[in-house]
Image: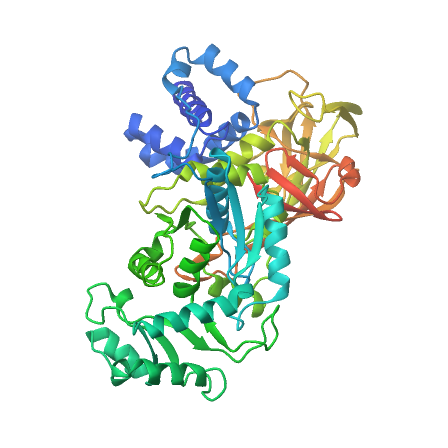
Length: 570
């Protein structure tokens, strides 16, 4: 039995942690705070954890208003200590803003579905355009037909639409192929590009040591001749057009990068019209300049390629946009590598691009995240270059705050065990669908037979007392693996008595999909999806696909299909 003073300390740290995290305290934080205050309790921690969990569940189940009231009554002064100054997060001003209209661009490659990392770039691009009453271009960077598919164009549009990002102009890089060819010839004529027919392994070795090959010494005429042969005579991988940069530069990106390569694959929009395709290094600066982009924002993984970007524009005498790099968004426990995500999908490790384990926008939508939560989260990260790898809890925190006031509450019991209450009166209890909002109420008839979770049941022994949440008290008479028998013990509310989630015997079978980390120790986690089976109250029969709800003491969920929900987060 935990002493009253210790239990009071648990409540204090739970309320303090819950206040700072939108009403949801974390067990590990509360335990850590307790051990800091009372290190002599360490030998007893295992015995204490079940009771700590009950206290945390009780407090987490309160509304923010109820929590604040308890803090004011039980722990005067704590509220003031826990108050945080919440500043509206805004993006910093753009550098070198001139009189012309600000134009940004979001250039996804249609080789997969958008993920949370793309969301950061798209939201930043659109937000800056709006800040300056400018425009944002959606430009499909579709110059690699090997991986691009028609379905991805539509998927990207759909994802942006859900995210609330509307472009002012839409275009495809592949529409400018003839233009790219003219600019390629211009650079060849300037003697700053050459067609290289060396083996790929030889090119890699020479670039590593900063050594040029004999192709680099060819005349302009010879290079033009080779260039024209790339369209008909050379096979794929037999010839590439390379920029004559600085082969000995400390910046390896400048060591004669590839500008064009031969790809004999049908393009989703152009078919087999073209076989010589520009690389991103060549196409991006030209498109940015000619599209009128004033500020080109991209992740800092491209930072070493800045010199190539500006060199190409200078050689072609084209206007240079302001180039801004920001940190790439990585989330702990998952990956935003399109190569890996595509592998997971094509190998059947996950069930499509909207599998709720994935960090794709379609998956986050299916999981029950709100688009405005994604926007707020990525804007909060800003456009700095410092690397960080937040976990899902940060996004969940934002989403929880937005879901809490708008979703109805229902009862769900995972891994249920039968509870019989001897002497229990037949009671029809009316439950509010939301503790604060006027979302109506529902009635549940009870006749002394219930189901509670096995986890709750296993913490009780004979003569223990607990309370069925919102109903009455029960004194344990006997326990077994398959059921629990108790005796009616009155309606009087007792704070020290654990409160247990329940459903009546008129329940329905219900399953919840629960996600774990997609990646553990660098590899795919084959246990990343779990199915929690249990019983839900009858009212859940009325739920429709895409409804967002909260299962009390379990978590926020989105209804995915008949009697199946996906856990969004706790």
